[in-house]
Length: 362
Image (tube, rainbow, N blue to C red; front, side, top):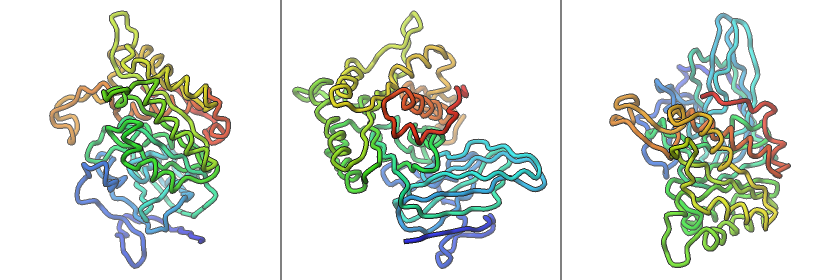
């Protein structure tokens, strides 16, 4: 099936079912991560309208002409469940730049939102491209697409697209509170299995919740490795590529300024399984340890969700969270994941990274 959309976005063009596209404002932000019904415009502050386009499920390239003929512009673009795809693209008066990225659609609606200090998008072109590779994510709350009503809580899966080229789309199946075991028992891995194609990738990051499981025999070198192997076997049976991602550390410092390992032997268990199964291993644990220690105890709060009471509408009582990330922190975690992919043996996935990952923004 061939599907093409090309038009000049006008904010006064309201969504119309007959036309199949237009702007709309959600009546409220979603608090339910499971429903996956958040709109990207709700992740901006202030909230902006969301461009809705009715399309068949699949992978698409989105081509945007960004800039203004008269003024300077600063444009940030989000798609789907608040995923940032273009971050603060700056253009001068009369400067028009073309940017392309891939989007995975699984609910029949391609959603875009344009925000930033002075956003300007002159043309939107959408093409369905079945040959685009899909990057599937399996993980927990540190990876998931957090609901808009939970903003600024953000998972690194919402930000990883910033570091990928236009030939790969992200399908984030991670969910809060899940372990490698419960993800499988709830048929979430089965859902991925039904969509996984030859040449796709499956990134797997668990441990935060696995280490809380206390049933008989549970542990890093027993049940944890047993369930992780099922992800590996599934990917390979489909002709896809599994990649194991070691969990990032929590924000707990020792007296000497070193990061405390709250994951016990789970990191080493994943590493050994990766070696034994010849699976690419992204050492996000080591990368995050170095990064947090470089920032120090005070600055590292910017990575995690620390907020004063009233600072965010969704967090009226504030927050002191040493596990989950702010939006800026999720961008940094996604950057470290990209850096870890570069350092790993995931050669085919490396080909989809942008050329300049850059350094920390915090």
